[in-house]
Length: 231
Image 1 (cartoon, rainbow, N blue to C red):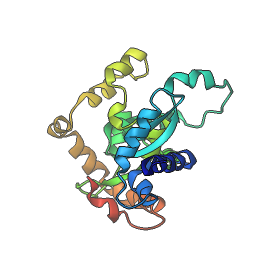
Image 2: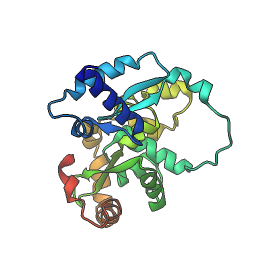
Image 3: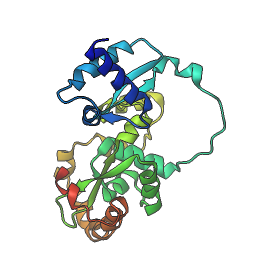
């Protein structure tokens, strides 16, 4: 057996045994120094291309997943209690499509106030995370989706989310004029209309206090300065 074949087997075993997607760096740390992990992943991906299990990219990570075309044959019909409220679903959708987005901006798009419990639910699910602080008065925390979100919904990146026209066609989008109009505006257009500035000024004090609470919750009590410059 060649060295490359053995390395491929080791890589395959790592991906099979992993409980969550792996980065190339993590895989490289378990292989001999100088191993071309990217080439091995490409080869392994081709091997699994037409099988019941595929090797897929999840954000910046890799995982073995059931091939989409065989999923219906494996699906079991069962009654599952609804775990996310309507408010949580709306909030998750807004964060996914408008990230990085502040709490005030989520409230502006929804047209309703956002309870702390709603964000806590999404944080516990591992689907959202702090992305940094907006360089506006009050330095509010911005939110975005996580790799766990991509993995849960079978996406490689947020660019794979369905577009607004697809959502309208499927009947999954709220057609309320305020939401539709806001969603269609670019960031520059919102700034030109004064929407973002008004939100920032009106919610600066609230965001300054609540952002610290969420930062401590997500970081075990530590400040969020480590992600401050991500924006």
